[in-house]
Image 1: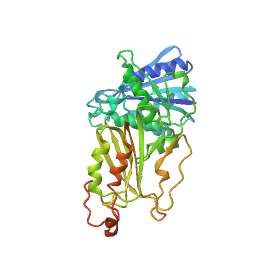
Image 2: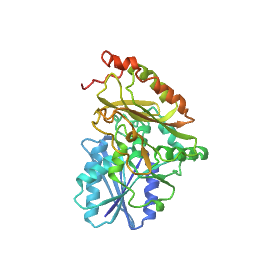
Image 3: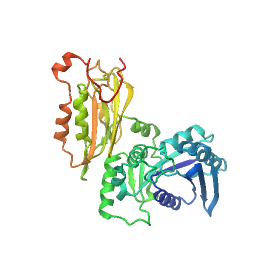
Image 4: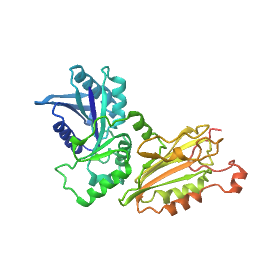
Length: 370
């Protein structure tokens, strides 16, 4: 029993992708869910002869996770019980594929294999979505008012977890050829692990690796293309072995983030030296998160896949474990030398190292776990 999970930012791309997948796999059943206002979920199931079912349900708590747990999972379980061998699951717009996959793993009684996790998107809109400062609710992608994610945050999260990007140009929206070409190039830089295809029939089965998808999605993880691309977009990766001065890094962060599509990694900040700080900057939004203490002992070996985990290659002091700053910056026309200079200026000097970390102000508000 095989499942293909399709996520999307908007319903038009999702619809087109699911129609293409259904045409490429005529024996499959497609189940599409949409979350409306006031917790109303519409479920539509399509089989070989056409529409099979359309049901409307009102949830007591109409959030994205409840939609998956209370409607998507039971619908898939029922189809598996009927003996369906291939199910295409079209998630409601803005529902993370990771949420659905985790719920399916917990909730399905029947054995199944997730063949592929597909992100459906219009490439000419990628840059606009990444730089959109509105929330998903404000931009009209979800009916959930308290969803504070931006469109860019959703897309980058989906690109990390998905194994395939299916390009979908909705018929209602005129295509910008130049923007489309740039979008395809940017997708290749943001998701070097993924297959990017225009043909649903070309999606390779068995591409989903749950452990690897989860590892790519961990806050602070750094994955970069194994080979430099010929596109205008590139990724610069830097490692800093000394702790960062908090105030100097605060000022440098604004410059680092300016103009880059995606800034991510982990920070060793002198004001909270025991805290492994995950950094995420997508378009106009930057966030820092304390992900707990650093790992003791030797740094692990990098995973063997088609991308490089730059963080796993950090050469730290054997007593320091994996402590150290690892940053990756993705954008257009990046100046690698300037990025290196900015970060080098944030390192503690010999005198500051000798003086210790006591008394350093923490502008980020992290509490050391010493």
